[in-house]
Length: 424
Ligand SMILES: Cc1ncc(COP(=O)(O)O)c(C=O)c1O
Image 1 (spheres, rainbow, N blue to C red):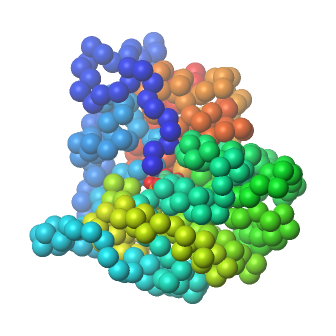
Image 2: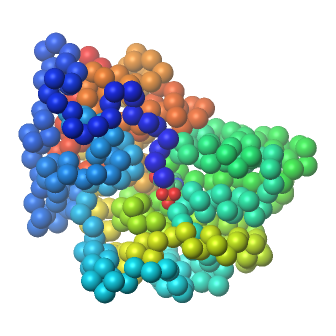
């Protein structure tokens, strides 16, 4: 699902002629994408393998929503070729005409093996797992199973923008529990939100984002145990979006929510989609804790018809055979976080950035730049670089932007150059 941020009027269309391009501010010249040099198929870093030309030929949202002179570092797509084992699995299926309906528990078994090897967790038992079309539709189905119209859903703002419309579209109401100043869950704020959400006796849920989009916060075992205890005390059901789980910085351990004692009634949504760039190959898994198996069983059978068979094949191959590729991407992301921190310190010291422990997203506090509530608009208009507007992430997002680090170091360098020129 995209980030709920349509390009501004007039920004769409890849076929923009030179005459349509907005003028650069006086004295500033922006390199075309051709001037950004990377793209060697043999590069050990998958984030440097594709050339700007190859990326421009893509037809997905990241590369088509803005004109060609805009450097796109917004929606959560990665500038990588597919992991080889994934590409092989799909091309083999296509060669065989194996393009029917999905069947069986192969994806769930692959997740269980991955979870065991990666996180030392034996939890996601295939019999307590259901395939769903994607993570957001999985969240909708799970929320339908555990709550009713008008019931509250607590979220930690600023948070992944589609949480708001998806929850509200299904007649649930959002209750915001802002993250603390350290960008971590604020236990007192969460308790206030739980108290408000349960005051009228409705069936409250908490939609936890773990790791957190946009801040990249990776919740610790202790934090998750405290969440579970609080939710239990207030009778709030916990639904966890763990789509970014495999994407953590070196030295950081991701803790699956359902691996923590006291989380038995929780439900998690997992997917290979973010870590292996498979958003176009629809599939995800809803995983129930032991005390939530009945809730999962209430999800209608027809929901399992939604994921694409090719998606299930791709996600299964990624989890089974894509870890070497994933590790190479994670190493590249570690470098990119350091690079961004260095570039910002040197060229835009007014921007506050804490290199995140997880996700490939960077959450930049631009409030001291004097660019107003929506610096993304200024960076786009004056700098021709597309970032996500912090305003769309709910309370606490104004004055911030989200930058997608899943690209080459050269592209990040050019993006900061453009942002610096735009902020001057
Ligand atoms: C936290 C989070 N949840 C869900 C999604 C969308 O997942 P899907 O396309 O599987 O619905 C994203 C995409 O970036 C995300 O960051």
